[in-house]
Image (cartoon, rainbow, N blue to C red; front, side, top):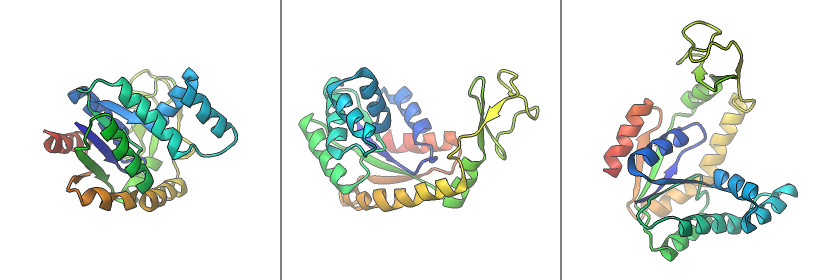
Length: 214
C-alpha cells in the first residue's frame, strides 16, 4: 500500500505518519528528512544536494526524485510507502508516477488532512515545549498541571519555535494552497482522493485514516 499524505504544516502529518508506520509497518518518506540524512551520510545525491544548498538555492525536482528512487530501491516490495511533503507540484506528481511504475508499485490513496486556517493558527501559535525533555504543551489545550513546571521532568524552562507565529503560519497556508492544491485534481480524476478532518482529536484522525486504509 502506497499513499500520499497531504496537509499544510501543523495539520498533523508527522504524528499520523508515525502511527501508520507503527500499525501497518509502512515507511515514511519525508523529503526533508531524506535530504538531511543523505547530506549527513555524504551519499552521491546528498553531496549534490549539499552543493546546491550551500549556494543558497532550492534543491531541484531531479535531486528529490533521485532521493526517492534510491529509497524505493532499498525497500522490500512488501513495505508500503507514505509520501510526506511530496509531491508538491504537478511536475513532481508526474515524476512520482514514473518512479512508482519503475519499482512495480501503485499509488493507492491520496489523503488530505483538511484544516480550518484560523483554528490551525491557534493550534500552532500556542505550542511550547519543555527545554529539558521536549514534552509538548499548549497555551489553551494542554497546559502543565502545575503552571510553569513540566509534568514529565519537573523543569521550569520552556521554549517556543520562532516560526510558530501567525504571519508565518498564514504564509505557509497560502503556499500550501498555491502549490499543492493544483495536484489534487490530478488524483481526483483517478478517484483516489479522500479527506479526513485534521482538526479532530489525534485519535479520531487516526481512526479516520484506519477506516480508509482498512
